[in-house]
Image (cartoon, rainbow, N blue to C red):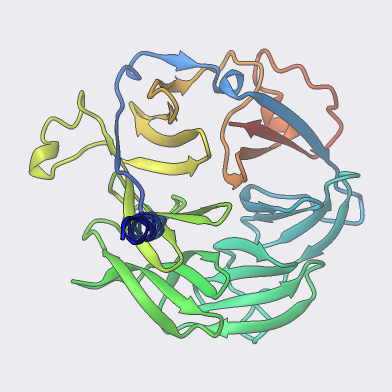
Length: 338
């Protein structure tokens, strides 16, 4: 009888752990002390690697960068001319450029985001309400038509996660679809003012975890295996005195979640500020970027526990203390390990 009771106790314990495997504790982060503070944020990374990329004379120059996607061997860069440039990471050489603007099945009107999984590259075209699929060398494969206007997306094992642009009253912001674009589920009520800041990144992927941010809010949700839970809530107690009444004046913009850190940006006094929160000890480093830093810090992509920032080499030459090892390249990419 004692053996039976012990066996049942172990089974119940294992079942409890299994049921909680997709749940995360809500982390409240209070950000203060940034008002008059400037920081060299690159120096807070455990390691910073630098890569250099070149554009040959046979290619068009890369205009203002919109977004990127980076695999172990390839870098995809989209710019505001709706051109996608494919670079080899090992050599830094530009391999191919794709400009295919139009309304046909294999054409796009705009490139809102790029994602990749299992050597298939996905391009989100919000204006045409579709996702274009390519092989890793940017050869067209197929398209996925959507019944809504998407704004951002990530690829999952069974389909896609989207944030929806054309929200109406009582709509949810986030949509989970299968690989054909059929809606499986929706979640998180859309903010009535959440359509005002489309330039922010809404969805990120950290290994097998996905994180979602509703615009004009300070809540981050974690999505894993079809289940959604609120994971982080950011507070600005020095500014948002009326936060309890739902009135806020500061909101996080872009954000990143690594194994050891939560990192976000926000605008204060017309300057981009950052917060780097340590999950291990709860310490916070925050302030605006120090222009006298030797290295820039404006990440736009996450790969594992690293944040990626990419800059026109001519632009970062304006930093007074920047000492480039190579200055004849078109683009300079920084990998900030956190």
